[in-house]
Length: 81
Image 1 (cartoon, rainbow, N blue to C red):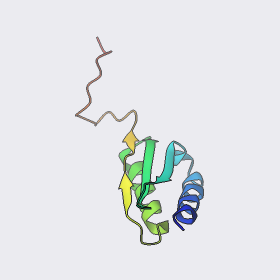
Image 2: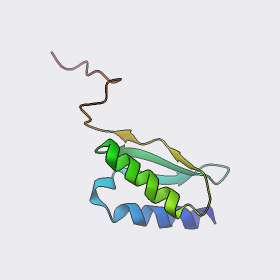
Image 3: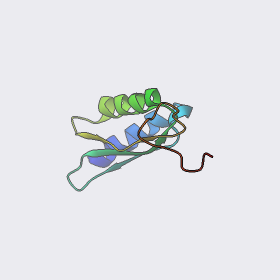
Image 4: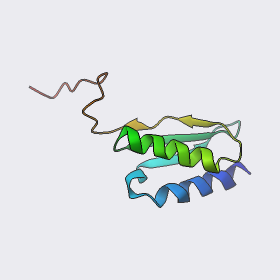
């Protein structure tokens, strides 16, 4: 049944082009895991909301990284001179 929720979440995420970098999987316990990248923290929150709405009571684990976020203070860019 976990696969059902996973495919439901994945297709819901694909409806939003901002969330195309987010992937859905399940862990050994059947919990939903979100990974990949989102364009903003707002998109990340939206992906988590969609997952929770479609998770059928399963736990949702958020491993999504936010890409290109200028306000992400804990990642410094070693390439900038």
